[in-house]
Image 1 (cartoon, rainbow, N blue to C red):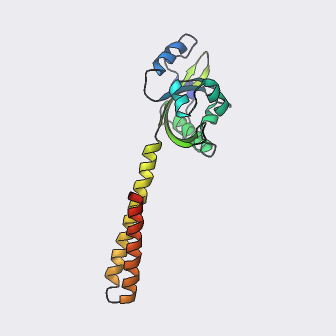
Image 2: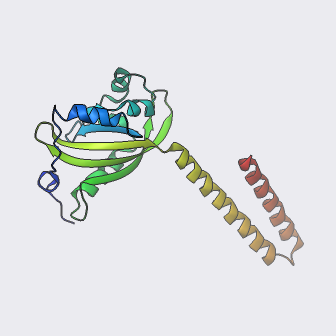
Image 3: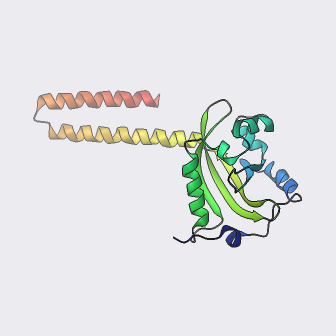
Length: 197
């Protein structure tokens, strides 16, 4: 796979400057979800984070958010997820088949210590004033992830029950095995019922 030169390939007409930044601040206050901008350099320092980003991280003030994250993109991402998602972002942006956009899902750690999930839509751009930057939209998808995990657990339980039914059919002529399988099936159903409540 070839690699594109980000700056040459994705330089667009919207340049982040000290004049456009106030417009971005105003727009970020009326859009759903969080919005932030960070520099694409070794430290990945933030240039801007909207109030909604602070809320996602459980912070009331920008100072709290800076203390929590170091005001860097790396500091915003759960430490166990950072290398994986950074590699994914780089692969998406640098691919000749890609474009200037990326999408990743990762965990964060809020100020209160709670671990949450966010999805992240980023756009790479070059600004003569700020250098290489990412514009990023994030939203909290924790409840969706919990529902997905719950559905996965239910599917696993259904698979177990189907296997028990198959075992019952196979052991209909062996009363001891049949009773054992039925007892396991009853226990599995009871466990499933307890999860539904």
